[in-house]
Image (tube, rainbow, N blue to C red; front, side, top):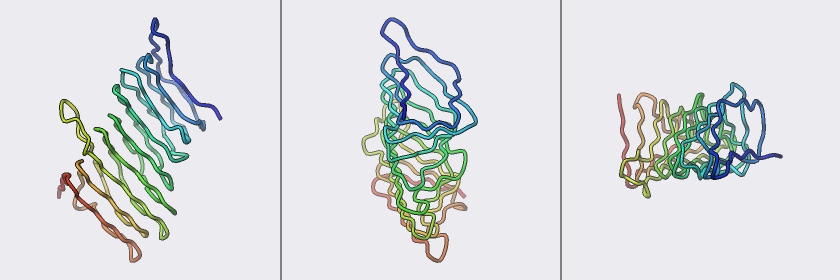
Length: 212
């Protein structure tokens, strides 16, 4: 399989407009230190495998097409940062999101759909989504909001903004807030949604903001 690299030499910055990469499956996506600001868009999905998404660019990069996590991976925004506008699925994969990455889910995201899945947020990253942790009866899902290493100066804290949050659908779900922030509406927060569901919310040194 191929990988997609945004690169340019020091004499010429790379600046791209909206690109359509419909229904592709790639090993990974990377932006080198000389990459200019880019936006990758389209209505069809892009599946990213084990090399994940990495950026060493100084400018923020944006992905605005549905992204499917096709293998265990890391998304690292580096100093310039990344914006992912349409996370589509995590499922039975492990996804680590770190270093100034802003992620939006456009549909319900299962972490552990039928098997084991995990999600770690760290490094001043944010996720806004409808989230189910441990959905199926045999599923085990874990989510960690790790703000312990956040830079507090001029940066957002590591935060999960959950429009709806189920921890333990029909399976087992665990969420740990360690130095980060969880914001959720009380009316949409469920721990153990069904008779077989088991949910645990652990707050180590973080903040949980609950609205009505």
